[in-house]
Image (tube, rainbow, N blue to C red; front, side, top):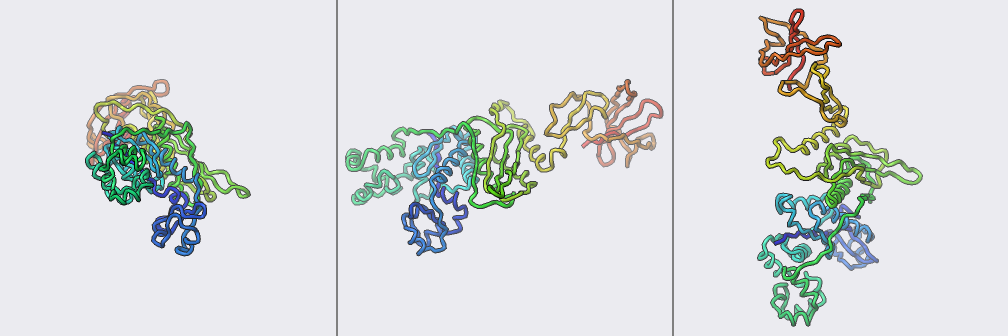
Length: 482
């Protein structure tokens, strides 16, 4: 048994041309007639097919926008590209509907409920309104998603799906529209009643296509699809309807491009390590160079949530030189996806990818010069071996002494300690816990002859001390444990 999710894009044109259509009376005009209108316009009496004069009479405050076929198809293509991150088996259906076979994706995303919520989150990130349905066949999911009278659109069992489909009106089947009057005259008002009619007579009085669509929806005949394939190159660009004057508002637009990019990466089994966001400004006489925002990740990724968090941190520090009229996203560096780890037991404390993501957020928030990573040098003397570099430039760590305690924080100059009752003193008497560890090195530039100890004060703070092995055998504080 397969599992299908149908995504019916309700108003792709309104979502693109008039993002605030839910709160206003918005109308899309095509060749002088209403093509799509918002609920507020419908309340005022506007209906699809009405002429502009009727709209102006019934709803003079309506916001009229001209239908653009290119914008309409671009919204559908953007949604199909973004949803490729959940399954490669995605097809375009009728009435602006996307059909996703998610049977093989359920275990990967933690079940149908979590996958369903993630798909809805992706559509929200694309600023697209949609109705979704789940069924065991693509045709059944499509009927449930496009029908207006359905309340429950989730059918995970064949028996439940048959009952829901039987209750749908005949008009929900597009192939039956020409014969709806005849079917109504014989008392056939639902798909369940249509299935009870003799097949030979129904085909003779209607068409063969009606039976084919009906059988496919109920799973009685195989369905054939042409799957959507991601393009070879990713080109993400959005021209804004209204100018953006604040950097924080860029995140909403860039999020739509990031969702599409992650779908493209999943379609090609790739991951990204560097993104370039170009914010285009005014053209012509007052033209300015586009503002450039670069996002670099420590590890390859195609997680849209992580990329959005990283982008938001960069936008906090961005100051726009001029209003933005278009946003372009380019994947500067991509690479093949690493194979999934086959460890039997997951690593404690999160995966390396989780730690890399946290590091990237910290780098974006504090700056690359304020976050350091250890870069030890192969030397026994701590003041020589302890070296730090910016976290984004540090390479693999050098040799480290294993099996002994080493603090990360060393004092630039060891601090001479006082001795009371034959014990080193630093605010309180220090109790020796571990040691000694003898270090003898650096004969070519002055001997370092020391015995190192781990000590603890009365509050539980641990220190790294050493005692000179020549002269007066003085105690020095050299480091503090975190």
